[in-house]
Image 1 (cartoon, rainbow, N blue to C red):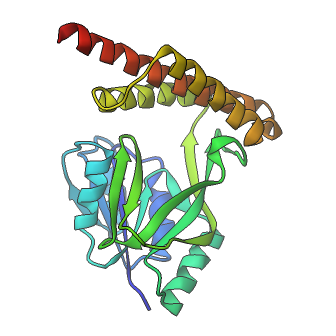
Image 2 (cartoon, helix red, strand yellow; image 1 turned 30 degrees about the vertical axis):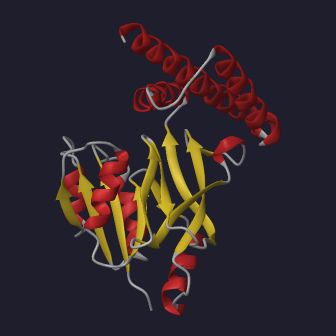
Image 3 (cartoon, rainbow, N blue to C red; image 1 turned 90 degrees about the vertical axis):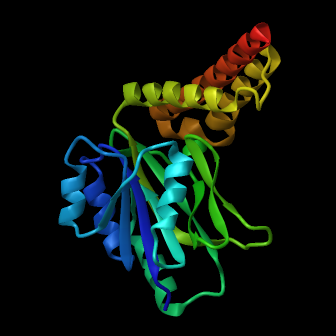
Amino acid sequence: MINISAVVITYNEENSIGRCLKTLRAVADEIIVVDSFSKDNTKAICMAEGVTFVEHPFEGHIQQKNFALTQASHEFVLSLDADEYLSDELMQSIKNLKQQGTPYMAYSMNRLTGIGGRWIYSTDWYPDRKIRLWCKSVGKWGGYNPHDTVVLSEGISVVHLKGNLMHDGYEDYEDLMAKANQYARIFANANRNKKSSSIFKVLYKSFYTFFRNYFLKLGFTSGFDGLVISCANTYYTFFKYAMLRELNSKRKQQA
């Protein structure tokens, strides 16, 4: 048997946190929610579920998730976002793992993202393989905000679990484009002075993003949704590198 600490970070997640916690309850030995002082009913919902609720100032997705790891009592941690939940098959995979024990220290799973309640099995959205269950002694959150990723110690093998991590990520196309714009700005601000950009990179990266999403990742099989998502992903790529170029140019002019 292995014990699992489930950790979730939240801010104003009253519409999704309840579903997330209910699926975690089926597999976790403790649940810790780290909240950045929500102004809605998130805290009340979490307290009703009997979780450990910790309030902590938000300094970035990576920083907040790494702080959440420090609150976990058990060595194995299962980290979800508030708008994610476990499919029945994934819950069973984790239950089997808990009962059988394991010589492995990290596990990945496919994330299945939806928009307006429609699940998308194409583009960069699927299979969006994520490491979300691991021993906290061999990994922590890294990458760049807001697209964080688990960074493992060298030589750690990752085993893939059956089942999907359900991500009810977008209400509609407007929400999709708003988040693409928001994430592009975060990327550019986080990477100025670290990464370079150019007109060629803006064009090349954007063209390849659309080609990969719509053709290589079979976005055309998802109908109009696939086309819109491919374009949104392309817009995100175009804008983040265009804004990065602008910020770096301003820095050079001020130097």
